[in-house]
Image 1 (cartoon, one colour):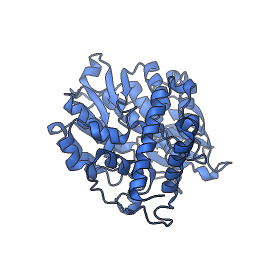
Image 2 (tube, helix red, strand yellow):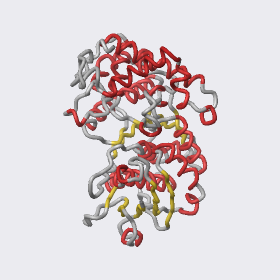
Image 3 (cartoon, one colour):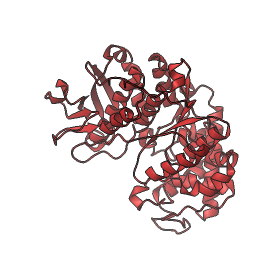
Length: 425
């Protein structure tokens, strides 16, 4: 499937032959075309930030990947899942990015399990710098999703004396939560909320395996606009996620490949860091919780007072919008959340649609994710974590796999203790 992404006035958008034509950083009245990124461009201009030129190109690539991931359905591929995507993107410096095509395609294949072929075109979007740019004085950038892990990350950063610039992708049900957390943390933190507003014709793909690339691209854009970046400093970019869900080992042998998401997997983040280094973008990705379970993050958070008061207002559910902006209580993210609260030993005041998992029916104990989690716990107890999680932990890609193996084992046992408490057999 061929996807072409460029500014509205670029000749490539109007050329014939593409399965999906995408207007970057603009909108279109053509119902056969997609659009993405207009609001991002407007917000950066409104803030008068001056990001690096290659950070804009990286954002163009990320927006294009999200548009392709949204607009090209998996069920139309040969095997009903793996897509072959030929993606052409207009950039400011296509010669440099063409030299990185193999690295980017490998990164995207790992992230989505699709086959990517990338082409970079001339005359991409690079804005005129603002006449009076603003250079924020924060010392790092941290992603804030509205979720529990990113909240803990921001709490720990501020408790340690850091001044993070918070960056968010707006999603349904999370906007006000993100705003509230940002306003309360550290007596109010600088906060950049962005929304790519992908608008693709026809029925869209819902799996969204490529979504984390846009979060990182936003953060790099913000990081390269900071005062300290322009002074030559290397900017830490915090993407805070517990180690178990970062590795996200398939619970059963049927959940192979990208059927389990890889949004913060260390291999993927390693690819992304190498790309930043090759592009001379002086930004360093950090996940301080790579070897912590979610329960351990709760226990060790530096601001227990804030956490006790507001942890239940964070969002973890994979089906939050579909359940009327309430946690379902039975998807894997909800199970890990509930297990973490159990380990923390504090009351979980979250409202769950399917709260009583002891009910032996298809909506509770026999629900797919609950059943899969119980099977995973049983497999680890019977066979050990090495046999169960082995395929998800490659020494060739990760190096010393023992710390990853350890956090995966502690994570699945955390879930197991919760399932036993909940009465799931």
